[in-house]
Image 1 (tube, helix red, strand yellow):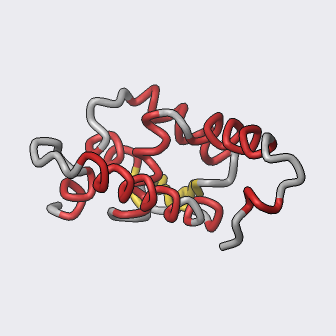
Image 2 (cartoon, rainbow, N blue to C red; image 1 turned 60 degrees about the horizontal axis):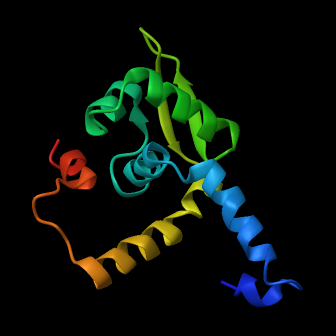
Length: 128
C-alpha cells in the first residue's frame, strides 16, 4: 500500500481525508459492526448482529447498517426464502478497512495490552 501522506502536495490535506473517513466509520457502533463482519460470521442476519453487538438498540443498528450500506461498505441481501430474511456482509470497500482495524488493534495491544475482562465480539460469534 502506498504512503498517501507523502503523495499529497499539502501535508494538511491528510487531516481532511482522516476527517472524512471518521465521519463515515468513526463512531463506536460502525467500527464494531465492521469488525463483526470482518472477523466473525458473515453473512449475518440482523437479529444475530443485534445479539452480538449487545447493548446496541435495534434502532441504532438499523441506522448504522443503512449508513454503511449507503456508503457501499456493507452489502444488504434479501434472501428469497419463506419467510424472507436479510443478511449483511462486507463489500470490497468494507474489506479494505480490515487493514485499518488490524492496525488499530496492534496499536492498542502494543501500548495497552489485551484486557482479559473485556469480552471479544469474535469470541461470541465463533462460540455459536
